[in-house]
Image (cartoon, rainbow, N blue to C red; front, side, top):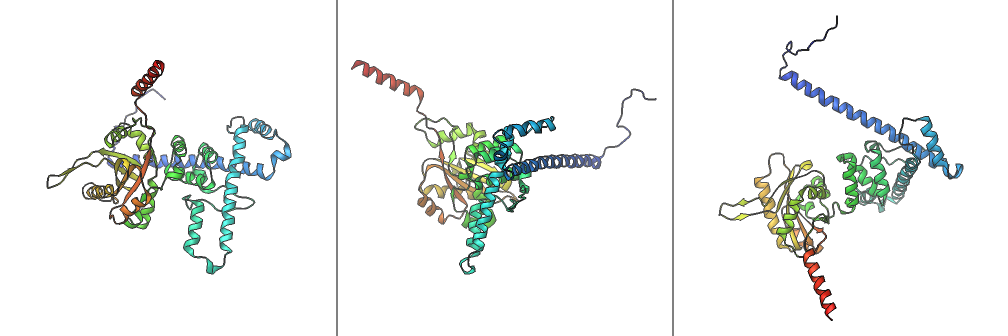
Length: 392
């Protein structure tokens, strides 16, 4: 007979082994849920891809007229009333999505054939690889390069949500740019808000463009990875600065808006501190501007802010700070620390020469912001000018 009763755990001893097993079960179940979600997303995208391909191959708009998308939308929603995603606008996106990547991969395939047809004596392996790399532009080896009548959706696309896809291919100016963002979302798990921010800030053009000495100071795999986390310029337009400001005021403003600054630096940066006092045995003290930790690569990033044009002396001081970080902050398992100077402007040759013989990995980038004259001063000047004109 079933009666109301309390269920007690007293009949079992939950030891550490049991507790750890529960944690493991929870982690495994979460992984199972994530895999199931990815499979559902992939299946839906594969259908969208095939539908877009059908529309292209059947030349549907020419064959069935200008009302085709509206009619297909009505028919699909009638067949699947509980399913979303079959609006006429979304159907048009499916067509454009397939068309965008099909044409891009077709061009890549043709370029590959052209390279392969060159006389062997005119082809150097390094040059050939460089040409291909320039076309793909950091897209990642995961991208499928097959082209054919039944051109299938690249596998990596299945890990990217549909709304991410729509924003990427509608906002990207080129095939390479779209692949860049596809790879970023797939490898780093970007949210749609974060993706939109990075596209709006034109990360594709700015990432990896800082001038550095990484090739000579870091091992080959690391040098490229670290290069990719820096950009030039940094957009600091979220700051409100008066027309005349110094480095201290710029630093104060960045620390006050550190959340937005972290967003601008990129995913994976963690704020450690500012003006961390470095005491030397002889009594001298030094104060690096800002210290960050880049979690994915396990390395400290020392940032020096300069509200003026870059001069060579800046590199020597930052080199000292990076050495200090390696000696005092870097722990077991951490990668070599990196220094970054963010200045108002720079001369490319001056930067390259000054970094040439530096033994620590340093980079130099610029920043952009909206310099605002103090409103009160501006208003007073305007009233003064108007009063003068009225008197005349």
